[in-house]
Image 1 (cartoon, rainbow, N blue to C red):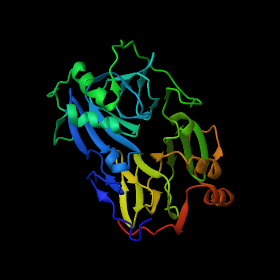
Image 2: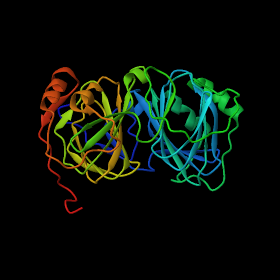
Image 3: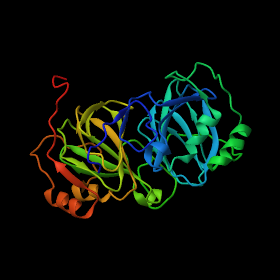
Length: 350
């Protein structure tokens, strides 16, 4: 940890491994065939741990089948309906649904709503280099009403090979609604419906594993958190992994190297190793996803939570803190506590 932790960069990709905040819609933006690509994390911003970007578009906007040679990906549906193909399976996905895509698995999608938005998180993230190579840089924060920069599959193939992306000639079959409730073991492709996964609970909070390290080759794990309004947790940092916060619903306050920032739907915070941070859920039924890379910290949630089959967080009751689990996490995991929960200092009347 540096002697003077850097103040987080706001709404700019830093180009080096620094903490930063990206409001919804901000980032490096490009149009490809009627879809708006918004890059919110590149390898040069994350120490080559990952890349992340939003894709938004109107009904009928689609991507051809692609295969990433080395990168595991997670897709999160934010808005609208999506027809999604994963190997030989097809689904109609809704907001909150996720997809886990191991390297070597062909996938494709087609948007089925007038405004659809998905997030793609990629281990390593080098494949994101394709976007500025084939995309048209734009200032707009919404996709165009009509495609203005068409890109053919042959063009994608020519450039994609440089970034480990292939474009196989596969057919898109009919997609259907189906409920997928199980996170499988191992590095296999899978769909996971909203609210499903391996659920655990603690006081006024539900934490659900969307993926564990066993699903991603230990590159990262993804945790969905939903809960009641609550105060900050103790200030802490990690020495060997990066924590990333993505707000799905509600309001989240983050304390990042001494600066308080408010997250609402679509906002993102990158907290690399050494970043002193804390968070507070600031509205009821707030939802967020944490992407933690690599996956060395996943047992924290096993130590601090208990398994549950409930699909909603517990509310009320007598406060409890799993002190034994917290002590074990401090002793065994990448966790350095440096202070008590911070006090809110801004927007106290909100």
